[in-house]
Image (tube, rainbow, N blue to C red):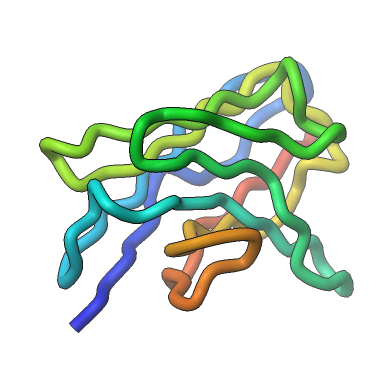
Amino acid sequence: EVQLVESGGGLVQPGGSLRLSCAASGFTFKYYTMSWVRQAPGKGLEWVSTINGVGSTAYADSVKGRFTISRDNAKNTLYLQLNSLKAEDTAMYFCARGEPYGDKRGPGTQVTVSS
């Protein structure tokens, strides 16, 4: 069974940082492109970033230069480093198998940016 479990969210002040993790199981992680997507209150899913199996990355314009996606294939784990956070980054963040929204997503981790 494919499982994706996100962690690392929380409440942070504007300008702060968080590191999100996604533990993957039930499939051969290293062969899959993985993505992060987010959903703000009352809005639809928004693609954030994608990384393929060999580490090539892509970012939405809204997060480029502030967020960094990475992966550890030995640990079957996907990461998202969030820096210079803004109020508009407040959302539930999901990791996804595939792109842009994936065929499987985890339950999500909440990121709230507020002073």
